[in-house]
Length: 195
Image 1: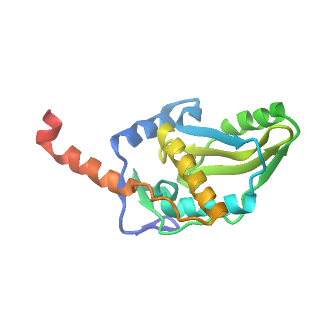
Image 2 (image 1 turned 60 degrees about the vertical axis):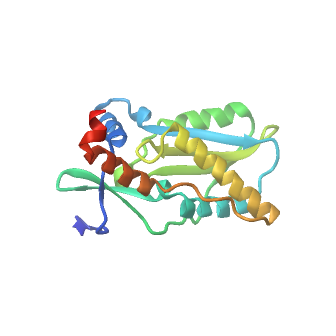
């Protein structure tokens, strides 16, 4: 299916009710920061950023929420899942102190995530003198909610640890695509909705 210049897959999904709420906030609010979630996670040691980049790309494979894309089709917003997606380069930010780090995060968090232009997240690794190193991620609320982003980061670091230690990968997360199907099945079941 074609949408302007973009070739879309045949399997497109409507937004589920929670996503519809977020989309309305994006569309009609003046302050769009509410519709994206910035988060950082750091440890008091030096992370291996090459391994962390590999772990992040494995997380994209494991976590279909990071492979959702959005498009407007016949004036309706639709979502679909990429089969694969890879982040080739993840910039490493180096900060002299915690204040410089927090100022950068605060400024970046105010920049919109252009989810209709295939930007569903921004990611940076960082190292702060005297503090440690970590990952900063800002993601569209249409892709992940607050709990979802915490689950994603926890899984990312389980993958990172498995790569560092050479152990078996943890069990993958549940698929968001399955949740979408279950949500629409539930909404179409009039008896369940009446309860």
